[in-house]
Length: 313
Image (cartoon, rainbow, N blue to C red; front, side):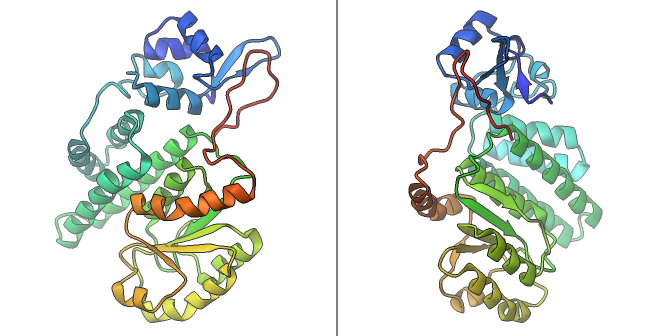
């Protein structure tokens, strides 16, 4: 997929004239950069944000590097969840990709997609596996497909400013579920955080080192499974000590039981991606103010002839 597009490509994609598209660029409605020769180039992240905000239907999505038929249907969240579950079970990556991309292009927030489509889909798949209705390979394959689609969504989003608040996160040792921590990363990035998931099944010791070396404003721990809750609780003080007063620690996932929550203080608990947004917004605002950054972190559109470049995801 091309990171920078020509006005002609974008105009064809959404079925408008090239002159109209150029006027929108000149008005700052779509971020752009200018080549040395004065030609407009449009970052794919800015183009998709424009399409989402203006509710444009993609007529020729292949013109901007997206699969044919992408963005040409509007699915309800419930219908999308049903379709996605079956597509993932069948191992149909193209269909799964199109469902999630269609919802994203229809201007649904990442948090809504995660809470109302992706998370319940995997809950249903996991339940069917536990009941013996599905082979485990289908569940694992579904996870890998979803990770690849989420990675693609990440590449289509605008890159947060490097000076913005830093957030890191992972899953603890023994927890191999990658999808939840990948969803957290996307939700935070859409909200302006310079967020990176460090991966899955990482020992608490190395996570404490990551906090000490990078000093993030926020650190999340996604806990879907704990093989030994007592050992987890014995190790967790290392993470709390590394976080200190400068790093807010957020824990979430079905592995964080009521009993675990009762034993912890100075930690934020999260049960959904929407709640994650609400919990982290005051932290983001506070850190942004400290760094003298605007609350809404967006790539600024460039006018024709203006030097500079737009950072891409």
